[in-house]
Amino acid sequence: MAPRLVVIITAIVFLLLAEALPTTAEQCNARDEGCRDKAESLKLKVIAIFSILVTSVIGVSIPLFSRSVPALRPDRDLFVLVKAFASGVILATGYMHVLPDSFEDLTSECLPERPWRKFPFTTFIAMLSAVLTLVVDSYSISFFKKKLAATTANANGSASLEAGERKEVEVCGHGHGHGHDVPAHADANIVDAGQLLRFRVVAQVLELGIVVHSVVIGLSMGASMNPCTIRPLIAAICFHQMFEGMGLGGSILQAEYGMKVKAIMVFFFSITTPLGIVLGIALSNVYSDTNSKSLIVEGVLNAISAGLLNYMALVELLAPDFMGSKIQGSTKIMALAFVAVLLGAGGMSVMAIWA
Image 1 (cartoon, one colour):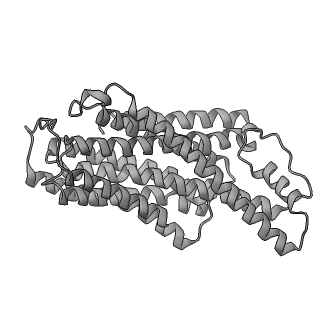
Image 2 (cartoon, rainbow, N blue to C red; image 1 turned 45 degrees about the vertical axis):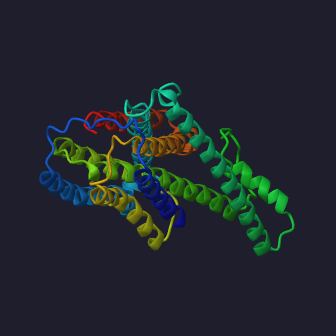
Image 3 (cartoon, helix red, strand yellow; image 1 turned 60 degrees about the horizontal axis):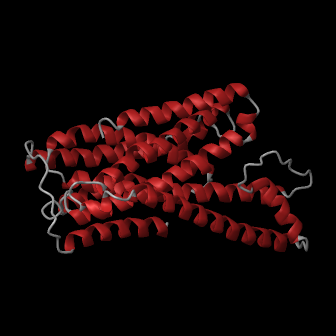
């Protein structure tokens, strides 16, 4: 769980350093404060902390208790459709919420025209983030596969490690050639462990991307003194966290973690936005969302998060499912899964109106 804690601390430190550094001469004028009311804003923020916390817990926990409902077990068709819906939510979160926020920050009039409005920093950083996620994903899978194969070979007293690795790559490798047939004599333990390993990597990396954005949006709300802005944001973020939590919860469920690890992951997801709001309240006297350094730090963090979320949604969540035997084996399920993705992505896109 250390990586998530490091990301949260790093994001907070960056934002604090942005305020500690001296401001440049090109400080943007404050935005419209016609609705400014500190007391009313604080009341709404307290409501937001508890409501967002509750909806986050509910959203991420729903998939974790789905096994008590026979129709929602991972081997059933309905689970495939629910996961497709949740994956659409994650995809829209990256494209429709996080990426536009980064564009808005890094092309703000509060920043110098050169270089910020002369070069597309948002898409460049998001691209690098996606590639870096691929690198981390690839190396981590490779490392743990070798470790897994070696452990299995030692346990079985087998000298044919190379053959065992070939079987594992055919079954568990993340390619798009899904037409490989599993040999009858394939080691079932390696197959199951390899698939479980991928599910766990997906769950960990996905939560990292969500955590970064959650801290940023919480901080922005906590620092705002405008109740006219905060009021609609509470409802939008609550729905956002619930559906996003469903997507993350589905990944955690497939990762087959123990109860302790599940609880820790649920805790980190649920607490980051409220934590960001609390931090924003504490920094409200010094933090300004029109400060040039704050805009740069927020914009960069959002771009990184967008690249990570978009990669995870397309490469790790949607592609394996739609290319897998479950959906490929039924035209009806495939069509319904596409509809589920569009509903999830469309619903999340509509929420961008109020976000």
